[in-house]
Image 1 (cartoon, rainbow, N blue to C red):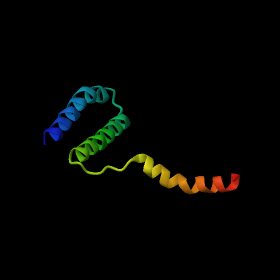
Image 2 (cartoon, rainbow, N blue to C red):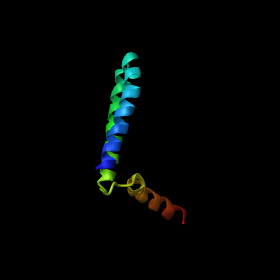
Image 3 (cartoon, rainbow, N blue to C red):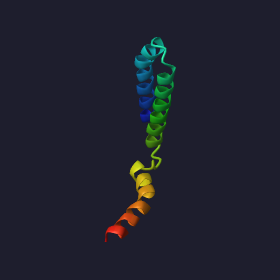
Length: 77
């Protein structure tokens, strides 16, 4: 529970520091991107605090490119 509280405090601090600048510059797209990325990162942090197995991005990339790699290896061997 302490880890989740820490994650939420850090996320709130980031919002308090960054949002006034983004709001004053009237960049709606940047506000949306900032909000989505911060929400995603906070969610991943909370999931890791609950010890949920978070998938590794390399596994997804390997899954996509493995067939292509196999074809290329067959061509050159």
